Length: 198
Image (cartoon, rainbow, N blue to C red):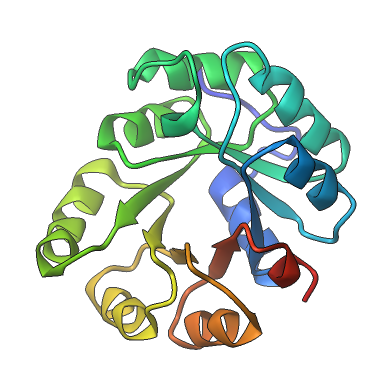
């Protein structure tokens, strides 16, 4: 079942517009961080915690605060890496989208009408060179590369793919944010609360 929005706009375009206005994404790893980000000006939240028991409540808390919410389905306790998990998220939560390293879950999100961000851990040239092939197969709305403090790699990616790039992980300060955005990232995802307050 494809989720319909009140505005009937492409959900990925809505998220990209939000990131244009506020390119710092709050990556939230626990309830304390969630409480803090709900009081912040950050518009987009990546939920990196939760379980089958509480993900509905956690997402709803963020949505009630007016946040755009993407859930990292790879990190949810009690779920397996199967398409049905994404369908369940679409049908039982108010999440706007998902994050995953797995191509099948990215494709499932697209079928369910959710925004799909595919995460890549770039640890060497082999992982970098696999990225275009995987992106072509999964067709995510955006990719998140980790670590995100690699402006040179972001520049390469902007040449190698037309999929929007989000820089995540090891983003420590304003200089890292500016370097990533200057290299062509559409946004920076960070759990560093000092960066949330920039």
